[in-house]
Length: 372
Image (cartoon, rainbow, N blue to C red; front, side, top):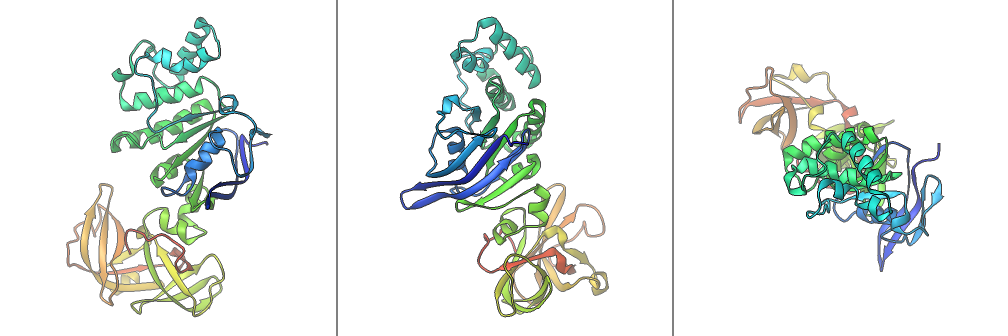
């Protein structure tokens, strides 16, 4: 099938800076596609080129198989929701949603019918005459989406639309946005620097860094099978160690860290050889704990340490363990129930994890994670 949106070799140059560097991707019809990356990586530049606000330096943008490079923004079958929504406070809800229809010359009765229909689909029937300042933050978000969707775009672009919301509302809106996308069966292209937004809502995610896509895949693929050090360090919490490769056996290797600990991990990226500098990433939830060495005897990586901090965050606790052999603290994720629920600072623990849970890459290619 022809994708709703396809970008080929898309490049944008600003003077000597290449903000977007030869990026290609396709978004299937009716899917939720996110571009995830840190501030300044180029994701907003891509969005503005798709919308028509910026012209690419080179490359092509196709919507439903047809190039739109020569199509002005107001003629493209796309619409855009911004972080600050841009609802008109002097207009009621029907006037806000029907604004684009009025500009197209549609009659009043037909506008009312279409507004009623889209309000039903977003779960806010009967609010036609209410003012914008009478709505909650979540209702305003839905009205902003309705104002776009009433124009029946092929692609809806969303530029960090949850960034201005408080944490609790942002969490609820993640679920609502995904539900709205399914209800309208419209292709959503969403940009964000917040990994939790991308992981929860997206069918496919492109992780962007310094103008290029590091990896495109499902949330599960990015989290469990990162293809680059940047993805391993940027998506999700992780422990990271740097060192030098001692031995390679197939896709497994042994890494001697800077404080002398030897760890086994799984090789990724370019072929690492003995003597290469490398780094290993291990998720906090991949690490198991035990009261004695027997409890972790089956793991490739085993060490003893003491609890230095307990970080409660509701569903689970983050436990920081300082290895007796030296080195930085290791972050471990533990449930709030079970035999380790009552840990205290200073408690001795044995920790271990499988070598397959450690993703190894050439050193210096990933972001510095918050712990490890």
